[in-house]
Amino acid sequence: MTNRPGQWVKGQSGNPAGRPISSRHKLAERLIADISEVWERKGRDALEALDNETLAKLAFSTLPREAFLQVTQGGPGVNADQWALLRGVLDAIERSGVEAEPAQIFEEIEHALRARFAKAIEGN
Image 1 (cartoon, rainbow, N blue to C red):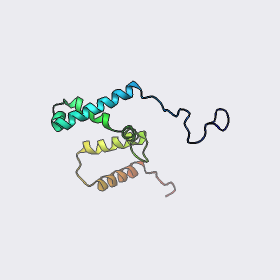
Image 2: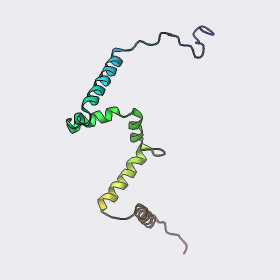
Image 3: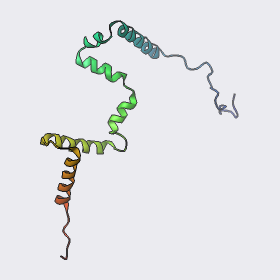
Image 4: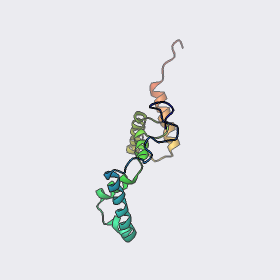
């Protein structure tokens, strides 16, 4: 089973029978089966009978964990701090009530930033 003591052969498990299914795993499987059965019988009516908080918890519990990480990180190429800053800019634009194309709004923001933070050229 091993090449050397303590080293397993590639592709071969140290426990061929595998890990026993835990009671928590069994419970989760039974719960999912029960939910599936209710869904098959009642469908959308079952969801509509739920209050908003319960419906939201159910919806979020079905999302893969990767979705939460992606939301927390803010997306590809944007870290959490950058996302928070960008979110602040987007909120400020929304509060301003300006109705224009996004490209035009960002062009105006860039123009205002350049004008506000421009450095004087000495010697002229």
